[in-house]
Length: 574
Image 1 (tube, one colour):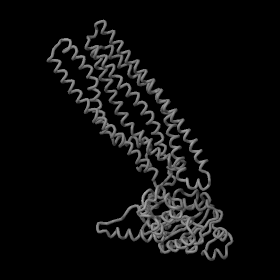
Image 2 (tube, one colour; image 1 turned 180 degrees about the vertical axis):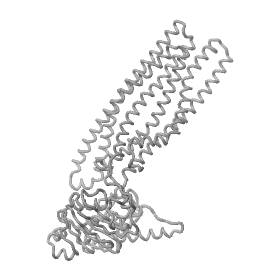
Image 3 (cartoon, helix red, strand yellow; image 1 turned 120 degrees about the horizontal axis):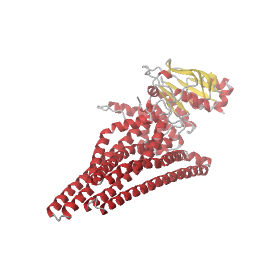
């Protein structure tokens, strides 16, 4: 079962299962620490009764030695237990983060539908962290239970009345704490939703800043983000208020509970039922109980936030796939023949297309929606509403999506460049063998791809050549430079079938003609489809198809269509 097929609960259960030993170790060490903490006031009471009251110096030295050993044990058990707990929380969060990333990157898609990239990033970071923190919260809860149990037993041995108060009162406090955490859970979920939306809007704003400035719409975009940010802030404040009320009320209940124990203990001491040492032990145990009971309040808050975040994680992981799964591998060798039969999707109205293997085919459109729908079908981002798409006679629905993506590469015109150097964007992974020959071949392919896309000219214009950083999203490059680097990356990948969409809209006509020639030469003998209305690119193709109103309007060479088809002339030359 892949990560994309797991529900949120499955992922949480698997991450906790993988951490079971660490959780058990941390819990055991924490229980040792709580046992020691609870025994300290008992030992102090013993010291008072047996050494101080009896003025026995030998016993005083003995019990002080026992206390010293106890404090050393307390120190190391807490340090090791906390270390195990924090590591368990971080590893659990990492496991969940990997599952979310795996689902987002799943070749069958679907996770990104209806969600901004910033929202998915928020789920993979903040929500994963909160769900992972449940590990630490569970261990802390076990520690607190151990502390309350040891205190109750010690109090029972000291006074049955005090022990019963603790045993009967603690469950009531836990139940009240759980009820008080419900508003926090609801408001925490709303807080994370609003924060994720604000992150998504901010990411979109930064990504489109150049376009917004060009349109003069930056003020409207900034105002939109301000509104979104204010809504997110209001949700955060509501969550913080709910958390403060929950914490304050639980602390007030806990304080009243401790005061009740101290009051009853004092009355028992006054009537002679407790010795001075036992009274000190009882009061010390009551004060010690404040720690575990405060821990219960914190655990309730953590679990409330963890449940809210787990629901958001589960929603992402449970999102349906955009395309059905196929099991068949892509047959080797790949001829690269594509056929569309009766395909309906978006701007496509039942089209039939034959895209021959080993040829450079141009597709011009009168409606951009038709181009987008065609690219989504060929890249299998979605399946047609009706009809079929075939590769070498095999329907794409039967093929493994990951294998298909490696065979048919759709290079969108708005693809992103990554932070790093120009070279790293064209060749993300160097292929080097032990003798270095594969590395030399890799360098040669990169040079040829860069030259074909005229990205070598971009490198020559940069201060450090291909080692120059392009900035986040390639923002240090112009639009035309980014297009050339993106085309070089697609050519360098060398898939059996390459589909490129408008790769030269931001370059000058001279450079465009040179890129068209380089593209044809580089892809000679391999299936290449260029979806564009650029006459320079269409002129070098073997065959051109015109999609008009979602149907095939004309076919032929570029020169023939320019001469004989008015609709084609309008689409390409206007």
